[in-house]
Image (cartoon, rainbow, N blue to C red; front, side, top):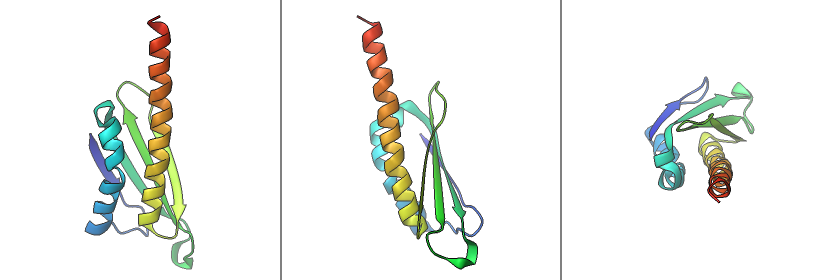
Length: 109
């Protein structure tokens, strides 16, 4: 599974942030890595220099042979934003793959 990180305007991707993103996506990689081709992480500074809760992270997972799955989160900093989006993505993937597994089981009976 390939991870692609795309900084948006106003968001600098430091080595520490990149490590944080890879750690946040670790559970997804362990659980679903063989079912995903790529994960793209996109950041955006929503409020610019005004500050506040303004770092938006959108993570897009690309399951093999299925439509992309997206999870988003906005927080005060890029670290929290990425962790929140990763948690949401894990939940969305769990639901998506769970429904597929259920459907396959019911089709096999």
